[in-house]
Amino acid sequence: MKNKTHFFRSSLIALLFIFLSNNVTSQEKSNKSVSDMDVAEYIKWFPAIKQVEMRDQWLKKYKMGEWQFTGSITANDKTVVTPQAGTNYGYSWFNISNEPVVITMPEYENYYSLSIFDMDHYMEVRVKPKKPVVIRLPHQKSPIEGALEIVLQTYQGLAFTRQVMVDNEKEVMDLAKKITITGGGGDFPFVLPTFNKAIQEAGFNKIDTYVREGHNSANYFVSKYEGGGDLDRAAGVLAGQLGTQARYAQYGQIIFDQNKKRLKGNGNYEITVPKDGLVRNKQGYWTVTIYSQEGRFLIPNKKEIYYISSYNAKANPDGTYTIHINNEGKGINGLPSAGVDFYGIFRVYEPVDNVKFPMIKSVSK
Image (cartoon, rainbow, N blue to C red; front, top):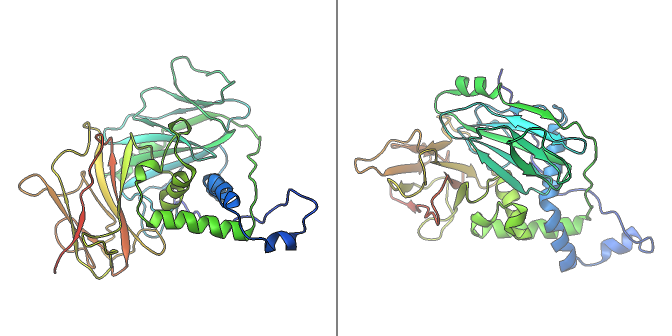
């Protein structure tokens, strides 16, 4: 039976600040202005804070080392913000403080991947893994010779799977039952620093402004050795937690039309997708999903259409694709905005180097 995720939306206010100095009272500390250093420290820890929030909500229904799958994502699902529709997500939090974790996945003809996140939101990805995947700490040895190994720097982490669905949800959910996870079982905690309300608000405002400015999202999702900046990583978590590294997936933000105006729910827009030049191999694909500007979730609509992808789009005679976005989702490859001000994400999996995303254009009715 298909299980649905019901994570609560991440709060903008985290935990209360715990003082490091016994000589400063809480009232005196709260009256002090927020320093740039305080804000920078909060931004550094923001990905970990959101990882812990997600983990704790998940653990209210599931156990460490247990799989939970979403099935079709709809506007009724309040999972992580900016979810990708048309995909079966799988979640399993684990603790490797005692021993490594081993994950196996069945073969599937369409795109699927396994992403491993540590508690700082650094990640490693394996696309269509043919061998068992071992997640371990630096001092631990792999229990399987020749496995695909991922070495983490935190005891806890998240195994996250993506399986594309193309009118075959039953097949995908049957395959999901064959995804295994063994080992782990540790109990070492992951400890966060805490920040007062003023620091949290100042830090969040800086992250939110950065996201809304539309910076290069290729820098948002990185592994530790790739040297991504703290503000970029925090922006990635806010804009689309659990996004994938740039070499595996690229995320084009659809925020402004050709006139640099924000996208309106009562507007009419088109995106022309080129025939080729986006993916580097046959297992790659592209997909476009739109979200409400206010909530960053999928937009409820009568047609229950939330995305268009290279798997289901109808091509023009010249091989290009035209996506129509308007109130009712009229036209070939139509996406309904339902009158809600929106933004979108153009995702490309297995992208070419320096992928160029098509622009969205405002058009007359």
